[in-house]
Image (cartoon, rainbow, N blue to C red):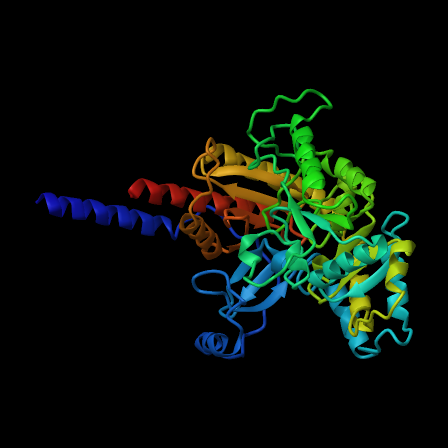
Length: 494
């Protein structure tokens, strides 16, 4: 009888969980987009092709990977017609919206006119785009070299910094992601991306000034509408955490690299590591220290550029600095494969000493797409939308942090947001991966796609197309709240 009662109790708990798994107060916003009927291979055949013909290194999200069919602005549609709110934007790449009409029309017209010439000839679009892009950057950042990906752009930035300074060593932050090419893997400092082959010669990492997970930080450190819940001993205009992290940076300069260096590269807000922000004054002081050692300062704007941070068009502007080299990718083409390195005339000239050639960089098609993206950002008011909607979302997510013990930190600026999951706020230990994965799966099942990041994959990365609105935010936050409630139910049932 006792065993039977325990079994009944367990079945009741399971039924409660099953019942809760199909009920949510979240109501998906309406959308007048009508997708085409899916006509390609069945899901099972797609799975088989994936297993046999596509590299296993290209990992997929979710226990049952999505088979996507169409996209429209902030929405994605799968092969069965299920609609999803996309809060990850193809890994922070779809900037102005999936299949944005202005960008689509521009690409279609250019496809019928001229696809490719290579840089051995002139064509109008590269010159028009170079002028338009560099007009958005401060002096002396006025010379652009167009490439095809962020890894390629950072690879070239490393090369140029070494050519120009005639030094070799480059410093990056721990937790940084700057690409997966053999050259840039030296700058990337996330173990998941490291392979057991030689890389990183001439690359040194320094302590990440993470005011949530690092040894120092408090409630006034970062440029965000939402601060950490850690107590802060700083007074007005004085950040003790910044001073401590700068001392660590000086220690790296004094112990790990020669007296002269080639450069220092940093994202204004770390992307892959989960929207990690630094103390407000850190980059300004670090840039000065690097330049004193003969190095150049590289801002990796692959994820933070093009208005995503809201208050400024470029992430480096939020830190009050002007770098020597800027690398751009992802949102630059709204999903079209293009990237850029923008620098000064002097640094650019160092590359002209010998031939350096890129077959596809700056193609007529890429430049037309890039120009249309810039026009869409301006005409649709997307930078302002990032500031308004992003701030609203951060404040709404902060309510979840106050409501749930497992939500350790909410951070970011504009529509570049991280939600870090922990076992408890005091220890800040990462929530176990299997528990985070279930929350993540639940969000997907309710129609919201979110990214993952952090050294332990413990942070939800929210970087949607910059066209989302407050109704989308309300839906997404309610979905995440429901998923967190289910997590608490599962924990209580154990």
